[in-house]
Length: 57
Image (cartoon, rainbow, N blue to C red):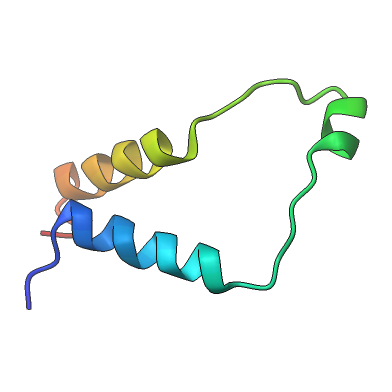
């Protein structure tokens, strides 16, 4: 079974939606971490990097 970027993103999204974690960035910002990374774009960039390194098809 070949997994496409959309399929991997869907699996990650389903996992995130069903996980019982709650994230709050307040403490991190108070400690000086102000940079923002768009989660969806981060996954696309990660999958592109893994493909270029031939780790995933």
